Length: 175
Image 1 (spheres, rainbow, N blue to C red):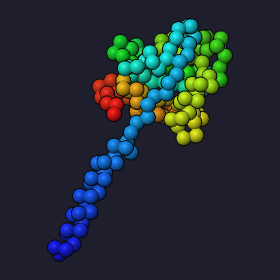
Image 2 (cartoon, helix red, strand yellow; image 1 turned 30 degrees about the vertical axis):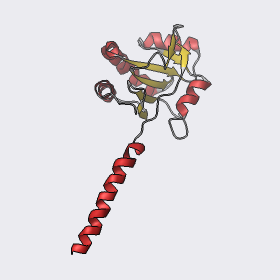
Image 3 (cartoon, one colour; image 1 turned 180 degrees about the horizontal axis):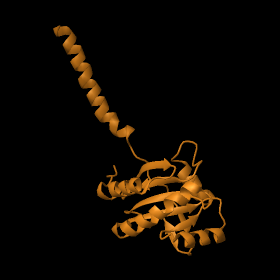
């Protein structure tokens, strides 16, 4: 019996150290893509301006029912958490600027909205296997500039709020 315990104990200790050493590598979070654009209002917006802030980049379209369904909640949450260092960044996909301006006005969108371009979609495509293929697709970015979550499909107000609160209260420390 003594001979069996010793090899199992050694294997367990060895496995534990491997997990501790390589575990941090397995859970390394990707950095948010570098991007810059101009909002529909003509204001510049970039990843460098957002450094140190929590934000969610949301790829959406006016013709997308799930996108339209989550926008009122996003407007409410932007109002609630905007002063606490949070913002949504809307990235309009397959739209014209004029139709998007009307949409932003109709839905009273109170966060920056930019038009998709090859550089922006290319930058965010690197974070998703196969690229951004459906909308809405959102990227949660921590105050340390790490992408903490990527999800496709609309989320409820409660889920979005939980993601925002987690990002605001539990900052990810960059290594």
